[in-house]
Image 1 (cartoon, helix red, strand yellow):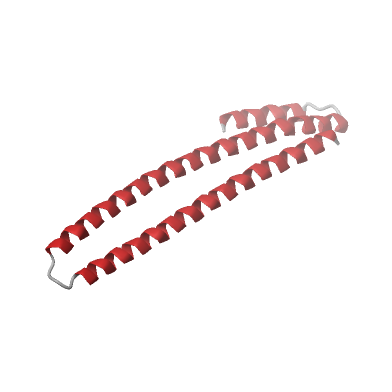
Image 2: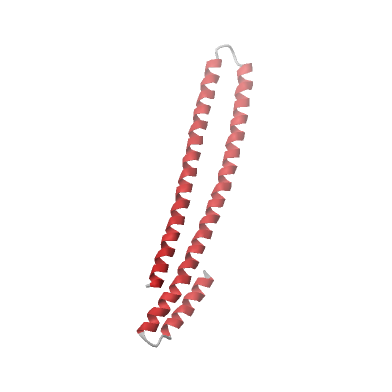
Amino acid sequence: MKSAFEDSIANTRALLGAKDVQEFVSLQNTLAQPAIEKAIAYSKSVYAVATEANGELSKVAERRVAEWNENFVSLLDKVSKNSPAGSDVAVAAVKSMLAAGNAAYDNFTKVTKQATEIAEANVAAASETVRGMAKAKKAA
C-alpha cells in the first residue's frame, strides 16, 4: 500500500509537469500500465494467501472431523457390547445417521473445492482481461 501511494504521488507530479495535452495523455497511458500490473499482482498475492489459509483450515477441520468420527464409532461399539438385548437397532440407526452426516460433509467439501477452483479460474481470467485491455489501451 505504501508503495502504491508513493507511486501515485510520483505519477501525479509527472502528470502535473506535462507541458501539453498530448504529453499528458502519453504520460497517463505510460503510467497506467505499471499501476494496473501492480494492482493485479497485489490482488493475486492476497488471493493466494487467502486460498492457502482456507486450504490449511479445511485440512485441520477434516482431520478433526475424522478423529471425532473414529472416537464416536469406537464409543458406539463399546456401548453396543455392554447394552441390553435389542439395542442393536438403536446403535445401527445412530451409525447410519453418522454415515449420512459424513456423506453430507464430504459433498459439502467437494462443492466448496469446486467453488474455489471456479473462483481461481475467474480471477485468472479477469486478470488476463485487464492486462489485455491495458495493453490495447497502451497500443492505441
